[in-house]
Length: 108
Image (cartoon, rainbow, N blue to C red; front, side):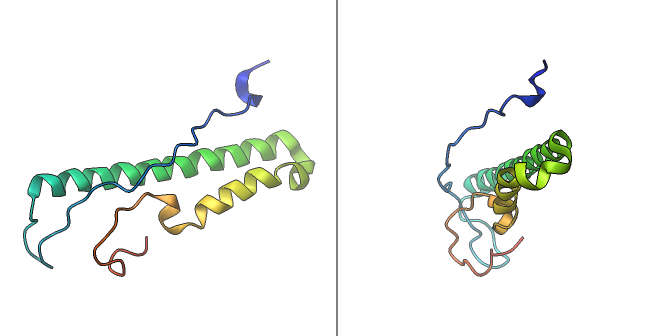
């Protein structure tokens, strides 16, 4: 038998918000350019992790539907609920820093 039906191995690690640096003014330079670029790279990594998480969860839903066939309504409920809970979060669960102006950075 293949490993296709084995339970997927996932990590339950929760990452804290990362240290970041914002721009000095609306169109101005960053106070610390190196820290600003590092925080921009970290935001990009966090977004990619969030997208890959959704991709893996979607694959789990598809695999469950194919494996269970006509019984997928009953047997895939937990998998679908896990996928739904992640998808409806703001920015699909991406870790965000503590922004100075939260209204400016809300959304997708």
